[in-house]
Length: 143
Image 1 (cartoon, rainbow, N blue to C red):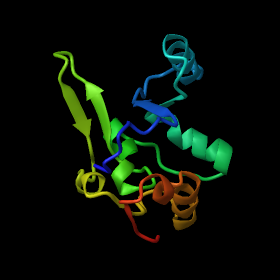
Image 2 (image 1 turned 60 degrees about the horizontal axis):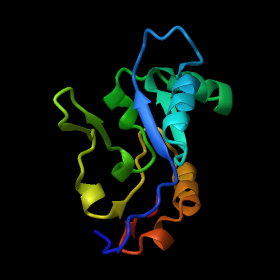
Image 3 (image 1 turned 30 degrees about the vertical axis):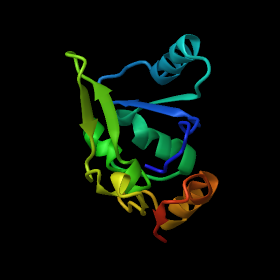
Image 4 (image 1 turned 60 degrees about the vertical axis):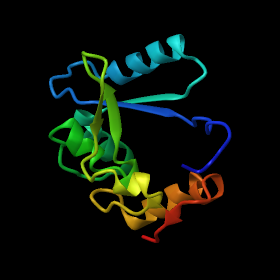
């Protein structure tokens, strides 16, 4: 959509899932280790959305409600355009999880999603990910 001659290199790949019955707290790290072994050129981050509330408590000192589903988790990501995930169905077709739709993604719009991330977090992400410098056709809304 930006007219680049070559694909933009991936900074990282986020893999999310939802397992509320998880008993091993090391599951995400085990998945990441496996993915690094089979595709070492990528930076993998695996997160069970059923445990995100624990991360907020332990790392940020914030109490947030547990998420109820994978879609519930995806719906909380800091930018509306990033609240999109894809998955492979058993018949090898691609499924899409997009709780807020895909208009911002395909419209090249970056806007704050206030469901969980505050305005400061949004601004920091826009700056650290260098959205404007890396993809100049984006319209970036202030928080």
